[in-house]
Structures are given as C-alpha cells and as structure tokens.
Length: 241
Ligand SMILES: [Zn+2]
Image (cartoon, rainbow, N blue to C red; front, side, top):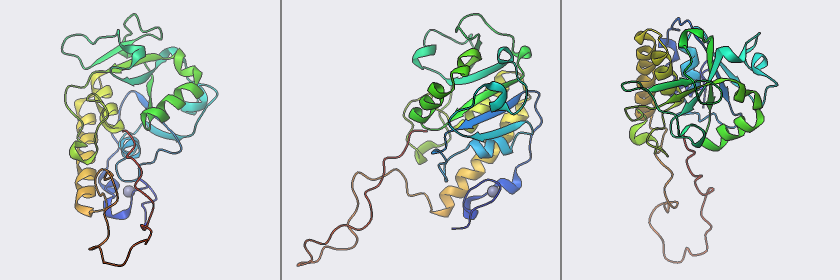
C-alpha cells in the first residue's frame, strides 16, 4: 500500500495536503517511541504538521532537553505534558473552569505560562510513554502540564480508550496550546484536520475496528475439513492510545 511521504499514512487516508501549519508562540516537540506509529489512528504527525513550530522526534532516549528539542533549551522554560490522573500528578488539580494545571517540576507552585518556551509531549501507548520517562530522566527537570479534559476523545468508537481522560496526542496538544494562551484557532485547525483524518479512515474501510476476541472462521465449516490450521496470526490486542 502506498504511503504519503509527508504524513506516513496510506494514501487512501492522507489528508495532509489540506493541513496549514498554524503559527504559535510556544514550540511543541513530540517524542515518539519508535514502535508507536499506529499507522491509521496515530495523530502525532498530523499534529506537528499542523503547527509551524511543531516537531516530531522518533527515538527512545536523548541525553538532555536541548538534544531532544534540537537546539539550546532551558528546562525551567519548558513543560512536559501529562494526561490527567497519573499517580505522580494525583494531588494536582486545575483551577475551576480550567482544563489544565501548569506546575513546577516538584508538582507544586503555579508557573506563569508566559515564561514557557515550549512543551514536550510523549506519544505512544501508556507503556511506551512510561519507557520514554525512564529513559529520559531530564524530563523530571521540566515543569509539568497536567490535563483534565472535559470532553471525550474524538476517536469515539474507533478506538476504545483505556481511561476516560485519555485523549489522542493531537487533542492533548490542541487543548494544551489553548489553555496556555495560544489563539483558539490553532486548536480548532488541529481538530478539523483530525476530524478529516478520522472520516477518511472510516470511509477507507482500512480500519477493521477493535481486535475481535477470536479470529472468525473463513466461510462455512465443511464436514471433513478438520485439522486445517487457522490462517494468519491471531489479532494483536489494540494498543492503548
Ligand atoms: Zn499525507
């Protein structure tokens, strides 16, 4: 199947030609576990294509923030995004009406968003994100953005979310940027391209839904055909967002 050289999606579901990079003050660097690319539903590439100051980096570890970002960066001026409800951030709450808390590296003390240069977002399943945390201890030096999304992910029935608060990477980035003071147009543009992407995936018929509990037999069972091994490998469990 031919894939788009720019977004990596199969051509049948590529919508990146319609994506216009949005200008922002903040930089956005997505660190993606090398095993992640969820070719159909992954949203990190679409998100960074939609941001003039967005970058996607694929790897397991970087020696420090500057190496991850690509040029000199000061950890106290960056924040790493947590999806709400993680153990390390359980005590943190957002102000009423806000969907985000920005706190210092110790999880205490509010940080002024205007003092930030950018945000780091980890892309992958929960276990892949955990691996990225372990392999990049410098992340602990960054401020923390903790998200408390108010609406469910647009993945909807396409992907079963492991946690209610779990958003796609693109949705998490959009929400973060809005809450940190970027123009609402930026998030709206990202979400619009994500909607187009999901519609294209649905229309393509390439996504077969969540892995079934067991493989379906192919065609009616024939008498005397016993012992034929099932074809193909059993479906892999769908990774968490
Ligand atoms: Zn594309």
